[in-house]
Structures are given as structure tokens and as C-alpha cells.
Image (cartoon, rainbow over all chains, first blue to last red):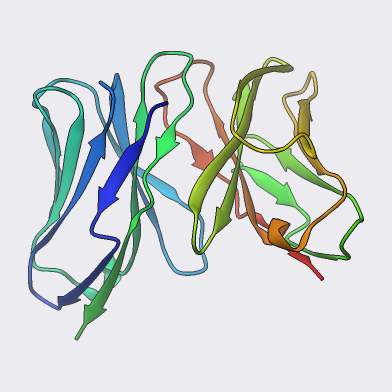
Length: 111
Length: 113
């Protein structure tokens, strides 16, 4: 069945540094979504990518969808303490499919 | 617009008991999904309901069941609770079709002793 792998599992970042988390699917996706879960909170939708090769930016966050629509990345520049949390990618395979979540990347920011 | 509401927030149950969790989706959302979240396993999909019909199901035993009512509210039931069922249970709603983003509730923290 469809599997979504996310790496790294943990990311310790110095404040001000950049980092990237990666998401890979075993099957071609119709779209990919990214969510952020703050400690003690629930996942909150960040963005959705639909087109092959699509790139979207939200302030310091840059999201990419691979040309083959099987992988995605989230790049955060100049990390801040507000970026702390777990970032999940979730892949959708068709209009009636279930969202398959990756295991998440837990981000810890050191001041 | 009110968000997704889950009740109760916290539950403590004993092994062997059963439990029912409730979820009220965002108004106008017809799809409700349930996820189990544990530290070691991440977000595991349980099932999704759309217009009172189960549309998708994850790989959980038959002790986990759910239903959706005509007003889109959903309930999840776990029978014969096991210690390993201790987790955060998240409900999420979305608009009528796949491809739209999920809106999560705050979750129900279930502890089985």
C-alpha cells in the first residue's frame, strides 16, 4: 500500500539557521499537504501542493513538490523559536483517497 | 466559524471497558476522519466518513468502529480496551471531496489503565 516516509525524524536547529525536511511517497500523489503541530496542540494545515514541480512560499517557509509528484520538501530559513513543533507531510493519491501522513519531523530550536 | 469540537478532552478507562468519543465537524464539512496519535507511531489513520458512509478504513482491529450521523457529527467507539489503546485520538473534518485540507480538533486524550 501507499507509504509516506519523512526524514529526518528529529531536527535540532540553532536559532537563525536553515533546515530542510523531506517527504517521499512510494506512489504518485495527486497532492501533498503540510501540517504543523505545536507541542501539546493539534496539527494545523499549512499548505497544499498540487502541480508537478510546484514551489510555494510562506514567509520563511518554502515548500516544493517534486517533478514526479512522489516527493516534497519543506525548507525553513532563519529558524526562530516560533518554528518549534512537529511538521507532517500528508499525501493524497486520488479524490477519494485517505491522507497518508508521514511520521513527522520534530523540530527543536536552540536560542 | 466554529472549529472542530471533540469531547471529552480527557478520559481514563480500565482495560476491558469500552469508550465512545464524539466529534462535531466544522459547519458545512461532510467528511470526518479519525486518527490515533502515539509518540512512537505518529498519526495513524483509523477511518473516514462521508455523508454517513465509511469511505476509507485504516488497519485497525474490529474493536475500533465509528459512525456518522445525518448532521455530520461523528462518534468513534473502542471496545474491550487494551493498554496499547492509550493515545491521543484526533478527529478532522474537511469539505466534501478528497484533496481539501483537514481541520483537526483538539483531540481526546485516552488513558487505559
